[in-house]
Every structure is written in structure tokens, then in C-alpha cells.
Image (cartoon, rainbow, N blue to C red; front, side, top):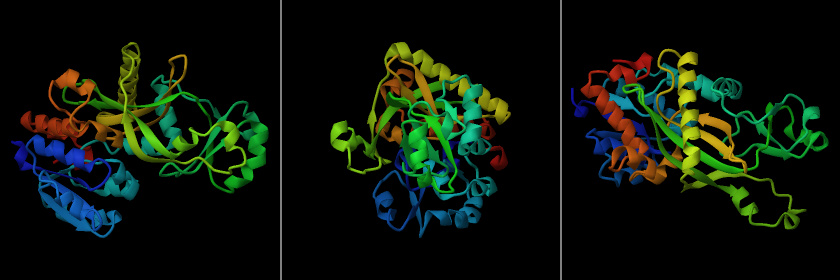
Length: 342
């Protein structure tokens, strides 16, 4: 079975260009599902062999019967989760790279915290009530998207003064860790049992990064709520003395994932969002169980991927190579969701 038997398909958003370029470089035909506004962009790239345009990404499920009749493999990314429901993902029977069972654990803040805690990762403290708050806290609303929906409070009294802003919405009170944000991109291969660190990045967020340039005294009375809408990413490399801990965290996350979503657990690309404090401690904010947009910095590879491959190896291309290796070893089912194994 050769790689040209299957077409790699993804939604025209997020990290689609990287995914499709990587698939093309590994010998796969490629298909981008776009909306009307992005159709011309994806048609402009020679490595995109086919484009199907729909009015809205939420209409993707209408294409599923067509895709089921073709030899395609879906590679999901963040926009798949944003535009399609968990039920939509589970309903699809199109071959799908990754384990859909992990989506429930990623989507729930409580389940995700259980997962990371069982993995022995260092997590910010959570408070059950506002009266317990004794340090700076970030109030995270359920369903917050696009970097919005956060509130910062200093202590219990400050929370009581501002709690009415939240209304009837559900929220989590989480200790606010002051340090350097670092997003670590991993890849775990179920074929080899090997974990790789692919790359790392920081996010550039507006308007919070602009606010950081204004002295605190000058901010008084401005009445500007910080927003964490991501507009871009910056590359980072970690001190080598801290790299072993970063690798250990990834190993533990994968190990526990096989316990909570047996037997396959988490595989393929994923990202751990961390804050590093002045005493070089990692605090884990959350996990993304698929390719993240920060990997777009490294379409031509990163310092870390070069250590493993000595050739340009993006996370998107690494996904395609995993699929190709599975085909060559007659083990395609190992890299697909069980419900879509063909």
C-alpha cells in the first residue's frame, strides 16, 4: 500500500497550510475544505491539489457522505474543534488521524485537570469560593474563546466587589502564575512508542501585550480590560538544563492518557501550555490534544526537529510521515481513531 492511495484533507484554517504542505512533501494528494473568503488563498498554493468550498465551516458535516466514499484521511486541528461539536467529531466515520476519545478530556476543564494532576504535573491552585482567595486569581469563564472572557482579581475583597460582572455564568477561580508563557509542541508515535519535542513558541496577544508596555501607574483609570486574542507567535528555545523536565512532562501526559482513554490514549501532535516562574518551575495551564497554530513558525523545521531528522520537518509533515509509515507497515489502524479504522 503506497501513500498515494489516500488523500489528506483538512479544514482551510489554523494550521492547514502546514498540514497540506507536509502531506504533499510526503507524497500524499491534498484537499482543503475552505469557505468562500479563503478559497482563493488555498487555490494559490501548488501543494493544494483540490479545494472544496462551503459557505460556512459549520457545514463541513454535509460533506461527510462524499468523503466517506473517497479514500481520504482527515487531519484535525484547532478550527475543527471550534467549528464542529464533539458529537460531530464522534459521528464522522471518515478515517481520522488521532483518538477522538481524548476530546472529552480536553474539552472539560475538570477532566483536563484530573488528567494533568494524575500525570504529576505542577498545576496552579484552584479556589472553590471567592472567600478563599488569598493571592492574585484569574477567573476563567466556561466556553471562553479567542482569548476573551477572563477577569483578574487581587484578593477575596476584590472578588466580592466585582463578582456581579460574572452574572449567572459558570467560572473557575485559578491562581494567577506570574512568569514566562511557553508552549511546548510534542509528537508521540504509536508506531515506535517514541515521544519527540518538535518546537516551542510564545503567543503574541492583543491587547495584553500592548498594555504591558504602559507603566502600571499610567494604566490607572484607563478602564481597559485585558484581552488575550492571539494574533501571532514567536519562536523560543528552552535552556537545555530544563529540557529534560519538559520531556518528562510529555511522557507522563502520554502515559496517563493510555489509562484514561485505553488502549491508544493520546498520540500524534499535542501541546502543553506552561508558565515558567523565576525559580525555573513549570506550571501547567492546559493541554491541546492536536497540532497547535504555534507550530506554523516551523514549516521548515525547528532546532528541535532538526536534531531528530537533519531535514526540514514541520509538525504537519511529521503527521504525514506517521501516516505514511503506518501505510508502509500495514498498520494504518494504529494512527486512526478506532471508530474510523478501515
